[in-house]
Length: 191
Image 1 (cartoon, rainbow, N blue to C red):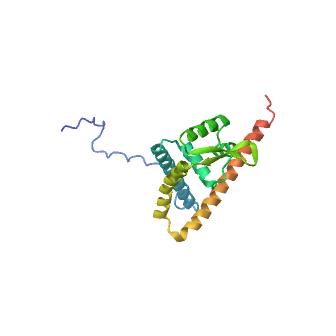
Image 2: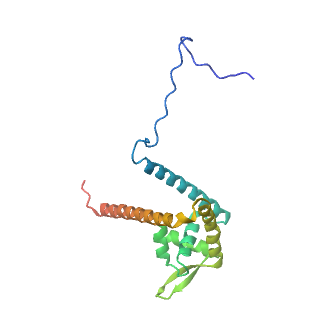
Image 3: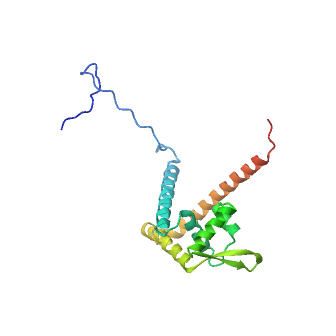
């Protein structure tokens, strides 16, 4: 087999080639006291990517999309109490129209049902059906198995607390950004 790669022109074959350019440093240098935070943040981002992939594949295998599965998990976390469409829409950050389509889609697949709200006759509550509970259990089992595989029992409570605190910190950030955006929209504009 003949190599057909063109040779680079060299004016003096006795001269050594210049060194290859060095790759830029993408991470935080190890001497940085916060390098462990950079490592943690990178690991978290990779975890988010894997989570999104698992959720997509597991949802697709059941004829759902990731938002469908997120609503199923939200209802599963309600422990049978049910939630209003408004609560679910706020959690999922969906418009009223998108929420109605989502509810209709999952109800048609027999994963959720609408029930009258005993607290407010004008309102309904969303509840999982046995089929929806099974979807939550099946997809949730993927995560349970992964945690069982990598997190020793003695570390699980501590990790759960760290996840809770991280979620609260991210929620505070999200609320501050939302409040700043609302404040910015309300501010008079000068031109």
